[in-house]
Length: 311
Length: 311
Image (tube, rainbow over all chains, first blue to last red; front, side, top):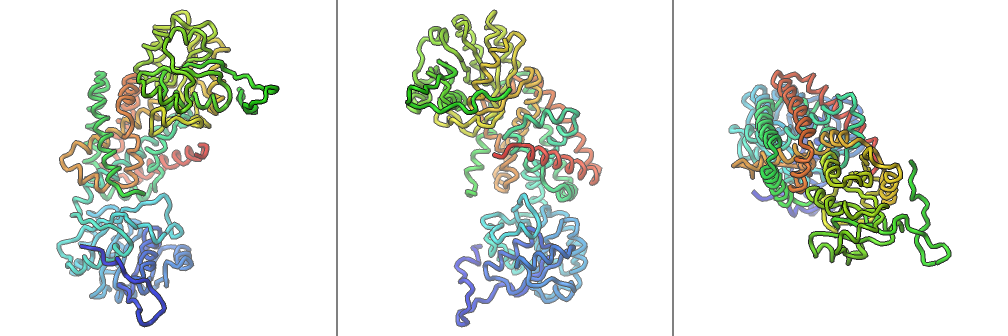
């Protein structure tokens, strides 16, 4: 499917060519980096009439209002979602089920709901538990756009530009509802992919969740030594890059690991087997095998880097 | 010890204040990134009279001459090292022993030799085997200044500026010879540390060699799957940083792993135990323990990053 937002005329004040936004009212739960950037991107594209936000902390809501992310802070969930075109759940993943339970009874017939969680199996299970016969209105999604910083202050209209967003549609979704969610992310400049929820979780266990676990593990193993300061004092640029993700948010990554427990254990076991193999190669001093392993890794890493869009 | 090169007056053409370079003649074996940058840095500091280079490939030597890294390409090893002030062995580590064997019989009484290998136990063993009663003239060193690129073309005068260089002096070294090598690296702008060779290898096994092995292992494990393309297509910025070092040079890293085999296996085993622990934590769904582990890692990673000089 091609982008819906290419060549959309810019919003201007001339009533003759007034552009009608694709989404009249968007409700965002969680106005941090992810939800905030989504709102800013839709606004920059001129594709949203009004953004209403809910958040746990008054300070975040106030900040989001001041930054122009929100038009209004919401008070009555039921009332706001009953006539919303689109609802984005962008809270920490541990809160997703609770929000689903609150909004499900009040959804308007035309309202489409999506989320931004890093795991999808658990989100789909929560949706099945809470949305009942409105399950078809929920289209799960995962924008692949992390950042060092979090919070509304870090939100930017271009966070999703040229970044992937993975939709994991449900059998109950109508094509029309899937297309609505796809269009919203395309308006943010994202590249849309589709996967089944289990396939999504299996892939991200391997290319994202496991590397995070391994990076945390390396730093943790060093940090608990008595002479840790000596080790850290000689760490250089290779260590810096390998461990950058060990500075990620502990609660977010705890939740991701628990939510994707089975797939992550599966990947961890494959990796442990790989390490067992390499240990044996090292033990017997098999230079040819070591070199072949490193060469294959380097070739794959280079091919991957070349296939990526420039950053 | 404070730097010997701070406030050294710049070289100029006025004979009245002619600066006498600290090193008259320097011989470099291997004119790639490491040896080339060393030569350029000494020249930029005005601390070398003449740089003579040896290399296996004529093309590299010609290039190094054209780039002003070398004043001359050497032909007769014995003759060149007999009256050199300083010799740097900066070849791939697998060639070190062979060069030691060639230069040992011809060393002048005043000549000091150093190297740039990433491992030190093997280099010291080779030195003990080849230098005989001239062992005291060899002061082992390891400049911690990797780079993506290699070769003379990548050499730069500022490669070592504010980077660490670890000396691992031998009991046979005189303080004067250690001071000569220290002064040479300080003239390149480096920060000098000293470690015993075994301590060096233990530390770098943990903070450099193991992370490289782990990064190679992750990419290799993915690359050998039938559906590898699917996995790589969803890898993003966390994967990019974690695997940057998996694009490192396979032969160089094969040699490092073999040279530091015992310490690396020791570190790998500690890491495998850490992964076994984390697997158990994950299996029993122990969120509190996961979060505490990630939090401790993040705190240590942040403290390390803050302690580093800005790049």
